[in-house]
Length: 314
Image 1 (cartoon, rainbow, N blue to C red):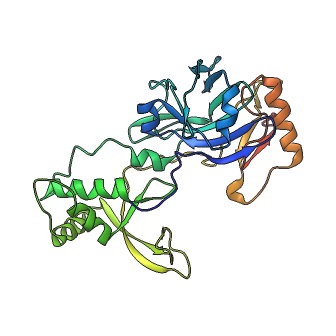
Image 2 (image 1 turned 180 degrees about the vertical axis):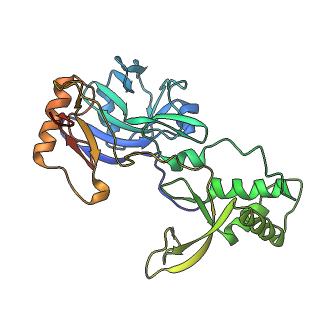
Image 3 (image 1 turned 60 degrees about the vertical axis):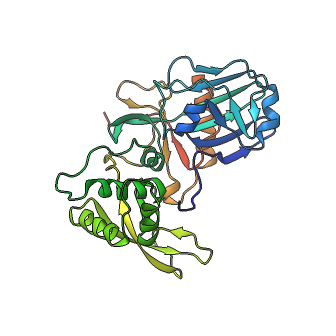
């Protein structure tokens, strides 16, 4: 497998005297084994926690665990009862650990989107969705060697480098090596794998891409200047839906605006190279606190807060 940071592990950790925050992406093994990943800083703090909540926009958060006991082992909180009818792999979760509770929050999308035949109401990571999709069970009717075609695509999806849009990429030699190491009824040759790739490319199921290899052997995509370029086989397990206002993430907050007004909301600005002003941070904190919402009153990283305002004129 191409070496790549696992978004399912805690990242973007922020520690203060009174709280600890981190982000992680929900993975299938979290659901299967009933645990929540913890940063190393959380292990000691968890001793005073009495309850774990999941807040996904309903009036009352879901209680995931109320009797922690000694369920903290090796940076994992075990015994978490994930509501699998409401959550699925790929959801991005923000955790806030206070003195007596751990609150896990989902960020609502402006409108639901469908990815890989699944409907998402909250922020998600396409990479995890791509990696953890069920195995392909159907093949192209034009394929002359469907079992090899499926094996090629599944190998790229499971072992390749995943970009931010969920595309999987793998160097041809790595692909050949891993396909040939697969234990199956047939021993595929390197020539057969190359022929399968060429066939899938001609049917637009795969395509070529260019990445680069760093001095330490780490694969990068897109290619970075100064590094040795390398040809990659690219597989797109699904096509991401095109969203209007792609960069806008909205969290509705109660306001005194009329029915023709726009409620206060978060807007992503990190991709623009900008930072929120102190005024926006204070406004968000005040609105969040007045709304009685759970979680931190601090403005999320990479966003600004747009105050409630009226749209249109009189």
